[in-house]
Length: 296
Image (tube, rainbow, N blue to C red; front, side, top):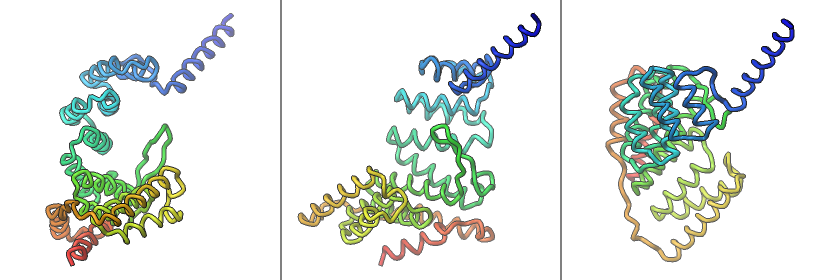
């Protein structure tokens, strides 16, 4: 009987462990565990938010609770509330959690149209890379997407941040500054999506031949992601828009100038942190000269 009881106990434990693995729910009975159960198993986001608040106030896995709660709020279109929650409670989180909280904030700012805040945060994160403080001083970090882990280099992260910054400038119709940023991002880690955004910046500035060359590079499969159906479709749509603008010679598009504060700020950082030049990436060495080329 005793042996049978042990087998039953072992079987029950395995089933319980399998349950947590399948549903990706942590073990235990704490407020955070209950919140994850409400989020992932019961599919009740409102209840999950209440429980995430309890976890934060109880000091239970605050790093994860705050981030997960903000993600759930975003799904419910409560982005403003999520922004305020992160700003108010990130002080309770560890230093290691700050970078991931910044990434969540960038997505929230993007969704609720806070473009200036998004730009400011992206610039701050780029400055951290310039200072050699990204990834807590390590050359790579472990990221997660769709449940899979992978390594991200500082080079890839810089390109990603610049891509987001370029998109933000496009929302402000500052296509000249967006072009500068996308050019630098492509030099660091090129891909089809950023190339197509760059071509749109050029189209908006009536630089059709340059835009056409960039689009053709994508359509001919010259960049990572070029084979993606969405990229090819978008490239073809941009060709149509380009030809339409060429035929109408539309010069009514308002051209916004370079963000001199950003460029001058980078130059100031370079002067102040001269001894740390070895920590810089090419973006910070080249962006001021690229600006001068545009000014010619």
